[in-house]
Image 1 (cartoon, one colour):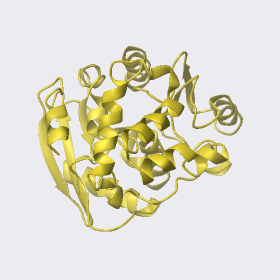
Image 2 (cartoon, one colour):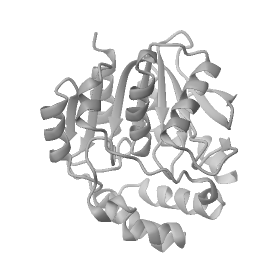
Image 3 (cartoon, one colour):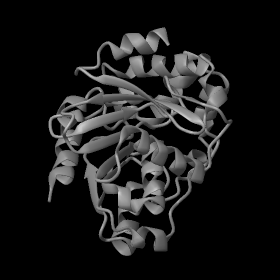
Length: 282
């Protein structure tokens, strides 16, 4: 938590901190941008927190009131009162969170990796609350990853069972090899190491994300943008885009050249430009 708080000191904007209490969770939310702006809720990936949005939060908060969330079933300052959450539990948590924040509808919901799957699943439960949604590098939802990724990958399992810096770094080298020399890479490794060592592995959600059916994808009426890097390791981006074109052509797709699973940390400018184009389009 000391490391988390020190990292939070680099959050580039003034923000309001709010803790929203729902039935099984206490959710820590970092609110930035104009208070009267349209709401934009940001869901982090697994092994990450609201702080992952630091590189892009200034751009996103120019036009939106942003709500960067710590997932109560993962790293961060949120907490939960049960061991794991099902898709129904997650949908209930998000609805309760929105109620607690006073967000009734018109919400833009952006998720990265596991957070993208949560955003995709929530559309099926409460579409009327959403204005738009962006799915960043979703490892499931659109297409199932290869077997080694589906079960967590041999390297990720090693990092989980033995959260040493060597094992975590090896996993991230596999997941985002093009980012190894980036100035933020080793800091990200250390964030995960401290998170796993700090006992957060005991409250990680055990629910496995699932792939949405053709009928579910085709039924989505909320405007959606699917974004992934061309070097994504978790699944075949080309197959995902091809499937969406076939069964859900209403979903927009974008492949960012030279990027992998590290969005939005790896290419914050490209990410912000493309996502804001979609969110601000009428």
